[in-house]
Length: 158
Image (cartoon, rainbow, N blue to C red; front, top):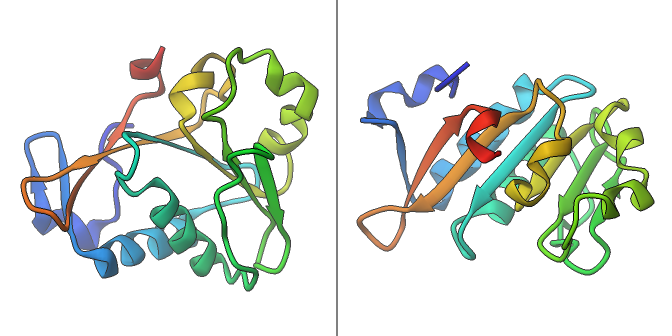
């Protein structure tokens, strides 16, 4: 479903998405997305370098109650965090040159498992994402501390 972002942000909507101003609002959104997450959910994050993908992931982890420090798994592709109310599997697929490389990681065990998967640079592996994946496109806003976040259909990545 298009634009299923939490209701408390509805006053910030414009045209096709919403504007988040400041890191605290990003954290609020992440915590709300964590509350909504169910085991087996996949959140796909797409956007330019520095658009806020890792910041949003950290906020989601905080909302799940993850106590370990969250770092981007750029070279390891996936990091697992088990200290929250459900496992968090944090993927950074920036270095994946072919979606088939995900088979070597056993991605299906994560995507169809008992935790929440958050996938940064998800557009690079769009064709293997589950149909129910929620896709969030992050981009820079008009001011330095603004980000535009849109929930878009999975099909827009393929």
